[in-house]
Image (cartoon, rainbow, N blue to C red; front, side):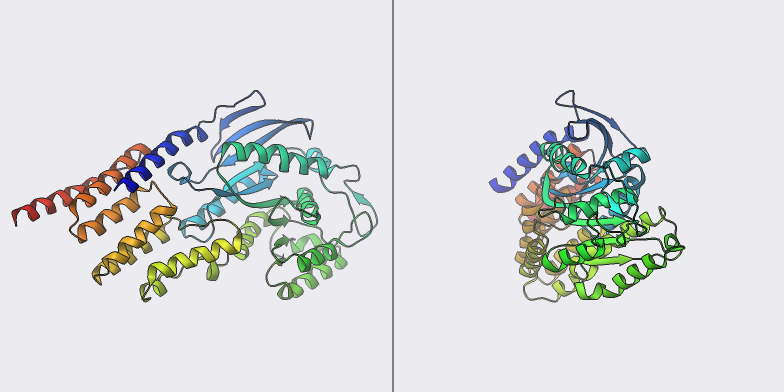
Length: 416
């Protein structure tokens, strides 16, 4: 009992502390912030770039209700990519098809700003794109100044995704080709891999070589087929790349949407890229297998431990998603019906150990204790669920109704 009370106190302390993440008060004059339709907008004075940069930040709904750390998705061209990335990720979170993440967008509101920090590359005709640009300065801003700010103010996991579009796709390529890339995952939209480096090395060959030498590398790139209307050499390069994808075990993905436009492919490509990065068959737990297992709790723990090992940071069930909470509830109810109450309790206790301070989990644990006729613990966890709901500003009606049922069961027990 002392363990659960201390867990709740810790969760409530974290919630109080993290409320400031939604109403951020700058620590210095370098930062200012405003609420935007999705998330928050901030301005950061960058020494590396010599200018003020507008930054968009989105935190998952579960952020203030948890103590866990989140991977970070960094977007160049936030004005184009931020809202569609948030929408795509939220849709996947609801079905536990991707990890919840902090989404950070970098606004580059003029074509001059976008090209000024792009990666210089040669076109097939020999002319140079962004010849005087300084991608290393943008890399310094993202990896040092912006990342430091994000890590100081938010709970982050050691897993970073980078996404760029058209000119800023070259920033993704630039980082990928570094000896020690900042991003773990690289997504280049409307890319130009048929161009060459300034040393006349085809970009696609440099990327293929990096993929083959780094087992954990993942590079997704897309190009609208309409962009090749007057460039058969580029089209043939991309078609050949797509054909060779299978040789790279799904780590170098070439997408060529046929009926879309240069910028319009962003929404399609982002959703597809996350589908490749977090494939359903290896990311989504199959709870039907756990139901039929002799050791369901052990199997679930092993599933998440293996998944965490593969991606390099701790992953969890997404309790706020429709998929997970209903499957965990169904599995615990199934175990109770089979009179495997100890396993049902272990399932919820393990989930609470990795996601402390979750009211729904305390409700489920209360139900398990009630099935064991442990009225005191059933009351304790029902009250914890109510307190957490009130702390978060959520409805507590379901939890209160359950507490009434526990009290009624207690009265019935005393009569006998």
